Image (cartoon, rainbow, N blue to C red; front, side):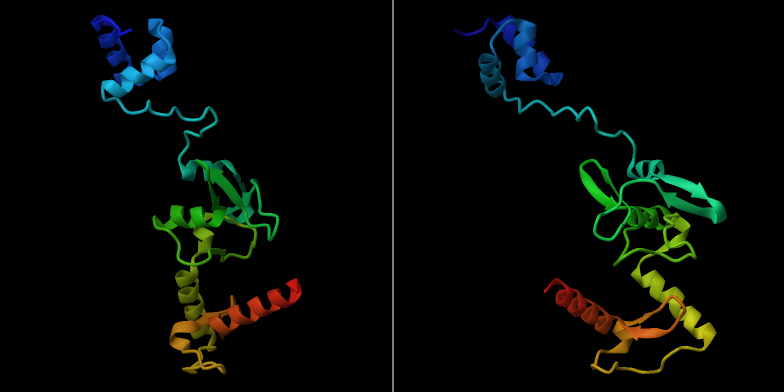
Length: 195
């Protein structure tokens, strides 16, 4: 049985305001199927989903800061969750998981990191935005340290033939090594341990 025009107009108003089929049906005393049929006939799409009751209203940067605690020396200690495999500080924001250091880097620089983000201060557990670097930044800073220490290498290829201009990385104390060889060796070691 069709609804009268005033009920249809009221349904349209409720749909415009974001009411669900159930809410509109309860408000007007009709069944949900009828409300759904009229929603389609009137050209309204599905009602917008309401945010989950536990959805954080904090920005990702604010959520990051809720899991930190200042410690001596300008460091930030991570008080949140860590991965089981290697203890990496992580947190979830709006159903997505982030590493704490990647967000710290984003806070410090305003951009997404390239490669892994690591702590570059004397406290390996620190997540302070001013104390983390991504791969290009880490390489640049360590290359400058190598120049100061006199450990700059003039080698153009590693022992396995990798171009050092592209693959050169530095240890925290400024000594150069081939990043590709290091990665390959690490993968082989992990595969051997897993076997």
